[in-house]
Length: 258
Length: 177
Image 1 (tube, chains in turn yellow, red):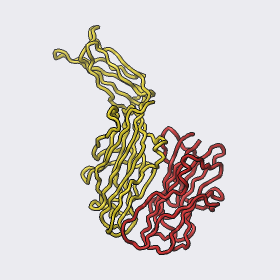
Image 2 (image 1 turned 90 degrees about the vertical axis):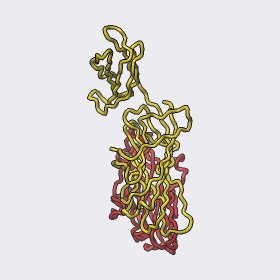
Image 3 (image 1 turned 90 degrees about the horizontal axis):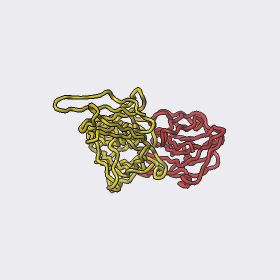
Image 4 (image 1 turned 180 degrees about the horizontal axis):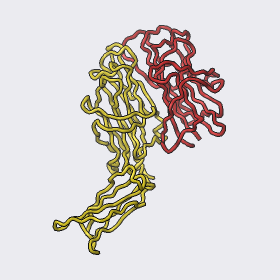
C-alpha cells in the first residue's frame, strides 16, 4: 500500500490543570478512515515556571479509548499534493474549559520532562520523546478505530499547576492507504436514470452493522450512477432518497454489500 | 518477526539499599526469541547527594526472575500479539506505590549508566533518556533465548545513595519472532 499523506501537528501551549491526570494530546484514526496511521515521531516539551521540590510529572503515552473534548487541530502537510484522511483527528486540551476526556490504555512509553527545584538561572526545554525513536523506521500503527493518547500523570495535583506548567506536543505521522473494494449502482425511477438522487453509503464491521459510519453521500449525475469504496473485510450498505416536484422517493436499501 | 512491543514500569522509589532490582524482561519460551531494541531508565532525584551517584547496570540475570509486578505489554501493531512467555517485571504496581521486590541475581554487566544527582537542590532538573543498552541494539540483535532474562539494577556505593526520594522508571522495546 502507498503512503498517501505525511504531515504533522503542533499543539498550542497547554497549561497544567491542577490535577494528577491531564490528557494533553490525542491522535485518533477514527472508524471510517481509509488509512493506517504510522506515527513517526511524538515529542513533548515543558516550561515549568515555579519551583517544584517533589518528583516531576510523568508523561505517559497509551492507546487511549473513549476520546472526546478538547479542541481539534489543523493538520500540516509536508507535501501539498497530499491530503490527510478526514477521519484522522488531532486533539489537544485547551485550558480548563476544553479538557480532553479519555480512558488510558497500557503505557507504551513514558517520559519525565523537567522541573525547577528552585526557580533561577536558565531553563532549557528540549524535545522529550513520547515514543521510542525506533518508530522512525518501525511502524507504530494506528488502525481505523485506534488512538494514541498522551497524559500527564502527577504525584500530586500541585505538581502540574495551571500557572506553572506549559506543555507543548509535536507529532509527525504517515498515512498508508488500506485495501478497498468497489461498490456501485444506478438510481432509476420508472426505468429511467435519476439525476440528483442522494445516495448514502454506510460501512460497518459486519452484517450486524457493528460500528456503522457514514462514509460518503453522493448526488447522482445524469446517468444516475453512484460508486464508493468499502474497506476490505467490512460491509457496505447504500440508501437512496430523491425529491422531484414535491414528491419524495426512497427505495429499499442495498445492505450487506461485500 | 511476530511484532514489536513495549512496556513501561511504574515510578519506583529508591530502596535505600544496594543493589535494587528495578526491572526485568524474560523469555521462557522454548521456540521463540526476544530481540531487545531499546532499554531506557529515567531518574528524578529530589534530595541532595554529595557522594557518587548510583550506577544503573544491565546484565543477563543468573536465573529467570521471580516476584515483582508483571507489567502490561503494549503493541506497535494491534494485529500482533505478544507471546505470553515474554514477561516484563517492575518493582511496584502503581506510580510511587509500595515495592514488590523482584528476585533476580545479576550476571556480567552488559552496559551501565549514571543518571543524575543533586549536589545541591538548586535550579532546573532535566530528565534525559538514559540508555542502559547501547543504541546499537536497534539494529544489532541482543537475543533472549529460553529462560534468559535481562536485569536492570541500581548499584549504589551506599544504600543511602539511593533513598526513597529517588524516583525511577524504565521503558523497553523488543521484537518477537
